[in-house]
Image 1 (cartoon, one colour):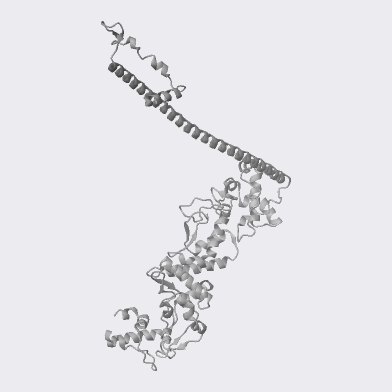
Image 2 (cartoon, rainbow, N blue to C red; image 1 turned 60 degrees about the vertical axis):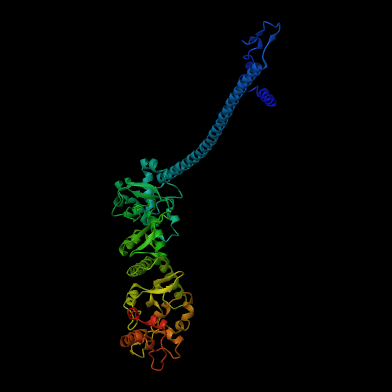
Length: 521
């Protein structure tokens, strides 16, 4: 009975929300007097009903009421869920509306700012037109660029087409911006008053109306300045087209880069070649794309290509830039000729090693030499096993042996040769101060390379008590002759070639100084 009372309590608590009250349900319950089984006993004067029938009827009514209550509760739950979903949708719509309003406000601000800029530029163009009307040859015409702009502004049609693109701190003052740059366009060269006047009055002779019609203005993505672009460039005066398609670009890059920014980037890359050339694979000098945003490279195919770029603009120290390019191109091709090709890690180690040896005065700087000197060094030094300009020698890397390219012919050598005690040929040894600290200087770059690059087998001096006066080439010949005479059994019979020394050679010495084909026997 207590559960029934709880149900009744819940019903009374939710009467305000239920579509039908409990009283409405009670109307449908039959009275006892209306039941078919309710009647009078013929023998009794009072009506009678069995207790079992009453219990069944009550139980049935209670079950019906309980089912109706559950149905009502389910309806309420469904309504609550729908209400919750509607609230979520409404919240999302409100957030979207707020975001849209914010965008609209920002667009309104941008539009207002743009309108103000347009109004200011229009006022500036009107001032320029007034200046031209009063004085045909004003301050604007101090450069070829200024004269072209004056002609564009003097044409009423061009004024309305181009005033949105001409900015006081952009196209008009480009000569001021580039004053401190190493690269200057011929259009921005300052003209004398007489030169400017002659050029202004003879404008049709060097740049006619058709050329003027072909000019449009385009913004450079690097310097953000407006530059000239020509649909049909004038072959006799190509510098007016500052976005020339002849400027080599990666096929994957579509960024607008003007001629001045292009060449500035190229020259900066050329200037940095003494540091970056080591990591260039292939036979051609590569430089980064001038846009500064993509990771693609540009190949400078040959010296003529670079010279044509330099001729397009006025560049300071053009000869020095050419010398750096020539040296880098030669060194890149030398490394490309090596077999096997050195890995990137080996190239990076070689770069650090050469910088280390150069800073200690043991090696000549690669880019301090003229191309003619490099070609001379490639011819080699007589009676020197390291006669080639560069060799692949083994250094102990972090995890493995690295075959590192070393320009052995750049090691500083004595001016006066030393005579080999065996072949009596003159041998140019390393300078004395380099030999005295050789092992210490090379301690950070461990490996047999530091002994193999020397013209004399200096490692013998660690175990022999005499000065080594025979060259490395003679030692190689000696080891080969001894092994040919005695065979493998004669390995333990090998001794120092010096007549005053009978020390037997160790295995590591034989491995170091024997030719590879001899040692493999």
